[in-house]
Image (cartoon, rainbow, N blue to C red; front, side, top):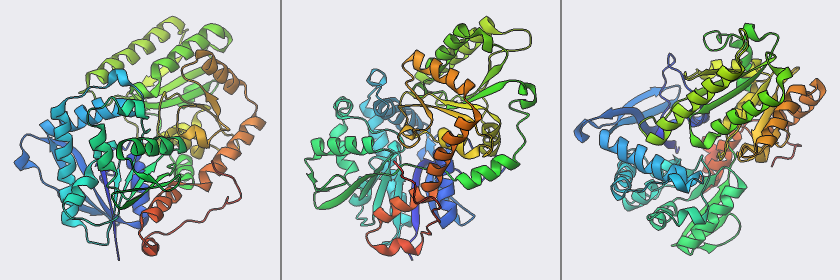
Length: 476
């Protein structure tokens, strides 16, 4: 029987006493726990010398974990450098922030080769290999060099840049040729899928068979969108049972106020400054709302070794402080912001208790905060989702209040609508949204990708489809 091997940059190791912030780690954890397999990746640690770098192995809940540290040079050049100073801004349409250094690209390739060598050591010929995200565009290239004939799939969790951005990267042609060594390339949205096919056609001159398939050097490659989902039933259960939120926000203090929750890494793609500016404008335009609502912001610092992120962190702190200084009255301040990492279960409870969720990304592959918020809601008294049109989730969740995060009036109007929305309208919007989440959840996402990755029908050996109670609902 074949097994599933997953490779991602970071691995969510089984530490019940540690906080897991969510996103990709939780999604992959949920997908693997259901069917088992092996999860390979970086353990988040650093070592000084390559001779200290080796893979540790542990097993938990049917999943085998194989992780290793990075050397300091790999961390700086592969992770902080090429991955997050070159590829990340490129994929998020920020050419002004792209930095390219040949030495960092060389280290990126060496790290991709390192993990390909590990895959070659552990994979049996019939095993299925699923590679995740922009850190590993070139892994399949090195797997093929090692003679591996396994079916290898790649899923990009972030947006796929258009051709004009790829043309700015000196190594674009090499990277796209490496990408063409995968059997399946998965994207979040139909728009990303089209851009990927266009870029591949440009650099590879591949033979396009149809809207989802191409042939390059005798390899049939599927390029398809698989919008990642969540586990609505599990989130609902956790949100109902979890009550340990007092250490983050004291909801008892907000009994006579409406609350707005936003959860973001401090990243320029998340539209934090734009959101706070719109919130500030709202406070100026609608003084009657003062003391009647509070903005709750969980803003987690990340990549603080990258100067752009360190600077943005300071900007966010200064903006929050400025708004609170200008508009605070008596014991009320408009923004309650924490920079703590919040345990995933606790976060679900925070979502359930919040009246509005505001997702303001300037560019986002999917954004699972939006989906988790809806999944956590009280079915009899749900909240309102304000959602940026530049998220992948907006394609699937049109019943949210869709905003343009680059248009302040759009955001101000949406916030006013959300605060005044009737219960009947909230219920109607929620029903459409929750039905959509159940129609294509985290298991459906995994199963759809693995079905296409399988060379034949062998995927039935380890993939157990879940019941789909809303098959009659159209899903975009």
